[in-house]
Amino acid sequence: MSSTNLSPADFQPLPPSEAVQQISRPSLSYWADAWRRLSENPRAMASLGLITFLLAFVSIGPALWQVDPSAQDLDQIGIGPGADRTVTIAAPFVPWSPQQQSVTPADNNLGLRLAMQANTQAVRLAWTATGSTRHRLYRNVFDPETTGSLGLPLVDRDQPWFEDRLDLQPGTYYYTLVPLSADGVENDGAVTLPVDVIRVISIAQAVDRGLIDANDTVQLGQRLKLAWHPLGTDYLGRDMLARLMYGGQVSLFIGIFAPLAFVLLGVIYGSVSGFLGGATDQTMMRFADFVVALPFLLFMILFKVIFGIGPGESGIWPMLVAMIILLWPAPARLVRGQILQIREEGYVSASRLLGGTTAYVVGRHMLPNTMGVILVTITFQVPSAIFTEAFLSFIGMGVAPPTPSWGAMCNEGIKSMLTRPHELMFPAMLISITVLAFNLLGDGLRDALDARMRGAE
Image (cartoon, rainbow, N blue to C red):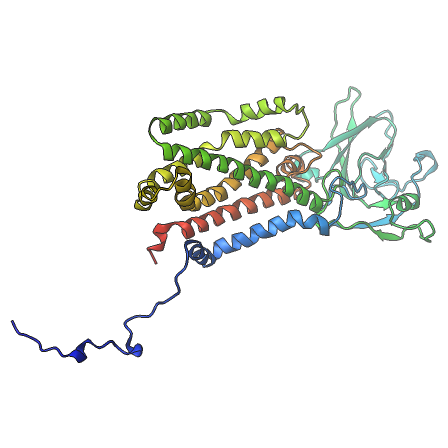
């Protein structure tokens, strides 16, 4: 074996410029490192920003858009966003006397024609009299040639005229006149007349609704601007934007408060069960299995009876109580599994040897090390709670009109989705965006708080 002669100069420290390795980044705490990892996730940060915007939309929005969500605009019922908001000044309504008015003949086989310009006060139709033949008049908002349906039957009559005043809105209507036989059977030769209805208002109505002052000089035919509704109105003329803001308060309150409550209950229950272990742990988990087997809808109905909530009344508190009592076992199982794993760690045994009490060991070591699982569980439970509220309100067991919620608004909007799709589209879109944002945030938190993901860097 060869020997090497070493001198004291061989044991001198290296100069600072030749240091082996510099620290690439400063040391970070667990939560600081988790925030760094979360901030580097663009989807999670975009979801966090979207959730912040939704919370501001339902909390600050009503202070900026001060419109009563239950107030009705009877001049703009069921209009969509961007619809025409103008109204024409017209003479007050006077009942029609067709015998005193001449009507220009039409060129169709039944002579169906308009007796005057159609407006939201009335649509006056006349046709050619053909002896004793009766006629049936239909009205549709769609072209019968494309739908195959004549629409709503308005009247069967012998007289060759009719004045329609049934819930007229601005737009195009299709009136179809069908001749009838002596026994009431529809004959061939039906005629369809498209009619464009314009929105009108009398001077007295304009004054009552604050569109003009009583001293203003206006002329018949003058056009005025109605109130602005950025997202349109619903079937009762209520502002959609205001209802979405106030409805979001209900939906997000249930969607956030309920998960916080039953996750907290599950954390306490699962921590006690996992720490005690043994027969106590088995007994507590069997009770949790029993709670899981309980039917949610049945208990929802039971709590509505206990709270005295009648048909057509909002069941917000029964819904919250049912969620808190029945949905805690899932987070309890997750926390129990974490506690069973953590209690075998060396630092827990060292804390006990140093005289740490049970409350100190659980509160100082066990629960802080399960916070990652708890936060991820909450973010994933929020979308589930929002969907539960929307489903119960959709079937009429949750929030009931006139109290707005996104689920209740979807229930109302589904009834007129073909003619007024915005009533269903906006609340359904907000539910979808909220659920997607919380799910993406939950994925980001799971990656940021999972210790096994840190070793991959």
